[in-house]
Amino acid sequence: MNQSPAQLFASLKRANVLGALKQLAQSTSSRFASATKFELVYQSQRYAPKEVAALALEHLFHKAFDPKDLKGEEGSVCFNALSRLGFTIIPKQTVAPPLLLCNIIKRILELQTQHSSQNTPLMQERGELVRKHFKERIYDAFNQIEPIFSQHGFDCAVEGSDGIGRKSYSPWVRIFTPSLSPSATEGWYVVIHFSSLGDCFYVTLGCGSTEGVDLKHLPSEELDRRKAWARDRLNVKGLSTSKFQDPIALHGNKLSKQFERATLCAKKYLPESFDENEFWQDITELCTLLTCIYDSVLQGKSPDDSQSALAQASAEIENVVSPTQKAQGQGRLRDPDERRVVELQAMALAKAELEAIGFSAIRDTSANHSYDFEAYKSGSKWLIEVKGTTSSNAEAFLLTANELELHRSNTGKTGLAIVYDIELDRSGTFPIASKGLVKLFLPWDPEEWEFSPSAYIARKKMA
Image (cartoon, rainbow, N blue to C red; front, side, top):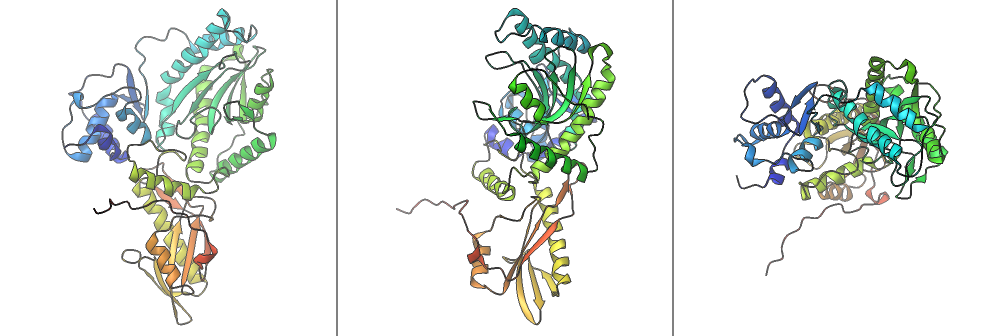
């Protein structure tokens, strides 16, 4: 097999990795060495990432892979592929924790009262606690946290910051999925904030509050809109933020105020009454809320992405053209099983809607024609195109050249059904699609729409 590692891993599917993990969970022997620097965490178990990747490739290609065939290190093709498929890799803790979480929190709050914008010895100590030790304690608890993310097909990571250049009044530690929140200015995350008075800290769920390299503050109206959308999505899923209703006051500067405005919900903790069990329970509950928001963003239900269905389709085209490139924007691409259940749900709802308005003899022709349904109404034959999306709008979709030609050459006799806002549940072994809204265009006139080329077939010119 003369394929590069990048080509091999570009073909890897999440199901291949799950098969490898199942095999490892049932086996007591291994031809791979134990993990030394990094571990893959899945459903409260920890594995050597290289071994998982090798077995996953064996499931895919039915060929043995040896340790020397793969590079298992941060930034490697192997690690990037596992992360792309929603698996979490973290640094391995090789020694006993030197600091207890309660002592880390207590000391950070003490140092908050000694704030300086300069990198003084005290601020260096605070940075070490925020960026290293607190982060390590969260990694230690990933057996509790990671399953919440992995059941939805997300990986997760931890980041701490005490300011870039000038030391911040309000340091923070956040838990997030890198593809959906590549930086603290983008997306949603669970975040721990510390009061500048040193009297308390908060566990919160919030979103990015600034934009650009100059950290321009987003308007309060924009942050309020994002929070209202997130509350609505949580309500749709039957989830509540009622446990996290404490007002947040960081007593810092203007940036601290932005952090407060971007907080969807919060719970206040006092260092003298800190209960670590309660803290981890709250973190896991907030992570559950976060993954619900991530699901909604990935399905295109966020108001910040009005053409998410088109962006998803364009990303899939890009994945075909450059399969080794990391997926951008909406996070990992939906796999074929997820696309299929969305398509089937769209077909079912479109058929029911057509029947409700008097169409009959509706026949599925999607397998061998450039349209999805053949249907009759008042003795006339119609050709119906169906487009299904998890996006919350029906304003854009991908159309093939053959489909466009069909509609143009049969104008007046074809229809378009866009089924949007479909719900996709990834928490089980197989994805499940439900709900959805139908928008019909009967007849559909392509001349009322704009068409932009999103891909070309390239062939070398003959000499």
